[in-house]
Structure formats: C-alpha cells, structure tokens
Length: 453
Image (cartoon, rainbow, N blue to C red):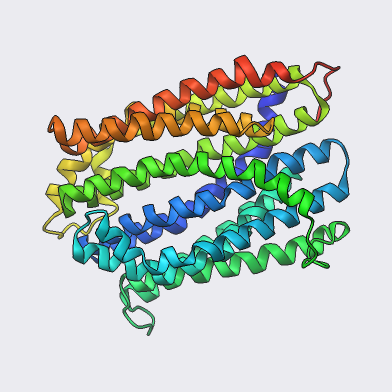
C-alpha cells in the first residue's frame, strides 16, 4: 500500500477513534468546566480527584490495551475462536482489577492527606471519589469492548456510544451540580453521580451492540467459564502496558500534587491547562490506537514494509497535530482559560497569570508527547510491552518527577519549573520509545509480500 493509501486508511479508521477519545475525555472536561463555574475549591478538588482516579483507571486499562493488538493479529489470521477468548479474558481481568482497587477509592481522602494536600481540598476530593470510584467497574469493561470493536475496525459505533455517554454526563452535571431542572444542588458530588451514570449507560449500550452485531463470537455466553491459558497471555501483555500508561499519568498526577503544595490558585490553573492539553492529546491517542491496530494486522501477516509505511504516516499526522496545538496554546491562552471560569470570579486574574505561563510550557512538549504516544501504540501492535514499560518508568519517574521537584522548589521556579520537569520526562520517553521501535521491534518482523487491508 502506498503512503497516500496508508493516510486514507488511517483517516477512515482513526477519525472515529479520535472522536471517541475526545467524547470520552469530554466527560471529565465537562466536570472541570462546570465545577470551575461552581467554585475554585471545587475545581481544585476535582483536579486532584481526577489525577488519582486516572492513575488507577489507566493501570487497569492495560488489559484492554492488550486486547486490541491481540484481536487485530487474530483478525489477520482469521482466528474467530481466539478473538472471543482474548476479549473474554480481558473482561475478566478488568473486572477483577476494579474490584481489587475499590478500597483505594474509599480511602482516597486519607491518602491525599498523607501526600501533603490541603485538608479541605483532600476531603472534597475523597468524597467525590467515594462515589465516582464505582464508575471504574463499568469504565474498564467498556474499554475492553471498545478495544475489541476497534480491532474489528468497527470504530463508528465506538464513537457514537461515547458521544451519547458524554451528552448524558453533561446534562446530568448541569442538573446535579447546580440544582437545575428541579434536581438537588449537589456540587462536586453531583459530578460524581453523573460520571457513574454515564459509564453505566455506556456499558449497557456497548454490550447490547456486541451481542446483536457480533453474535458469532458469543461473547457473553458461558461467560463464567475460565480460560487460564489465554488469561495468562492477556495478563502478561496487559500488565506492562497498564504500568507504562500509569507511569505517564503518574507523572502528571505527581505534578498535580506538587501544584497543590503551591496552593489552591496554582492547582486550579494547573487543572485548567492540563484539561486542555489532555483534550488535544486525545488526537495523538486516537492515532496511537490506529497505529496499534494496523501494526497488529501487519504483525499477524509478518509484513514489515506495510508496518513501516503505516508508522511513518501515523508519526507525520501526529506531528501536524502538535504544530497546530502549539499555535493554539501560544496565541490564545486567555480565551481558552476564560471558558473554565466565571468572569466575576475574584480569583480569575490570579489563575490567568499562572495559567498563561503553564500554557507556554505545554506548547513546548507537544511534539514529544505525541511521539511517545505513537511509539507506544506501534510497540503494542507488535506485542512488545515489557522493555517499553521500563523505558517509560525511567523517563517519567527517574527523570520527569525529580526534575519537576528540583526546578519547582529547589530552584524556585514554582509551577513553571514543575511543568518543565514534565517536558523533560516526556522528551526522554519519546526518544527512547521511538528508538525501540525503529531499531528493535520492527526489525524482528519478517518480510513477506505486502498485502492491502
């Protein structure tokens, strides 16, 4: 397949995935926007809670990350039985993980206090997570089924189910946070209830779709029967994948904790900027998923040429998105931040002053952030997750977090220093993971006559 052919295939497969990620992210972004209107303290609390939740969520998502390349490879081999086995055991592992970590949600307020957070903010965040944490169970199961459908290239339904969930969350937030339409005014707890509701409805919708449209896979028939051999394979691929993603999210969570040490205003500004940067990252994440699927198909056929061309296209598209994001962050920080705050908010000027600087630093790491995301997707496509986990962990935790602390507190650069540390960790990860793919993983794929897919 030619490079234009790859670009067309990536667009057809990738646009719905990007839209689905943006819609999923909109659920959390809506919480941030509406709670920003509700009050600075609520915004700071949901910033902490969101970081805590997503560290755990993305560790558990490793099993869905394993499902995607494994199903893609079995699709290329036309092995329908293994497609079912992989997906079922991905659901088993995700459910077991969610139940295992629920106590962390229950005790999250105390954990945040131990991490040095403000007592009032930690208390609010803990109460939020005691409710929102129950959404972890359906959210992880939905992730597995989305990965299964994406590997089958049924990405349109993934998009529309996620959009529906985002709309439900938005309306429920508007009602329950502010007490509109006769609902009780629940503030931050209303956002928690809305998130659980949207995740539950997503699970019901996607499970019904899978049952009706893919009956040959009999996904939920005799679901209780174990498949220990396949469970082990998914676990061995999925745990490193989850740890890799968690290490990156842990870098951002650590930055949120450090911003919390600086005070409520810096933490609120961080919450806004990280939410916007996270939204733009969803484009890179969607392209990373496409890279996983297409690399997985090529891996199943042992087609190195096809894999290399697809990788070049995915990297190029990610670079174009990074350039557009840099322009946005540099030219329009104030209009963007104003969407998250009431104009009459007395803290608005202080939050803007901090946020403008953070947006400038966020612009610096756009290219490397996209590069590490695409590299991870490509490596997952060839079912290489162990060494990338080590590379990511060293980059984020041995370089990123210490650099953030040194620049932010020892050298006194505050929030700007903390975010420069983020940039250092992301840059190192991007370089190491790209080298891993191009100099290692792809060279182990055999060369056969290329096939279009």
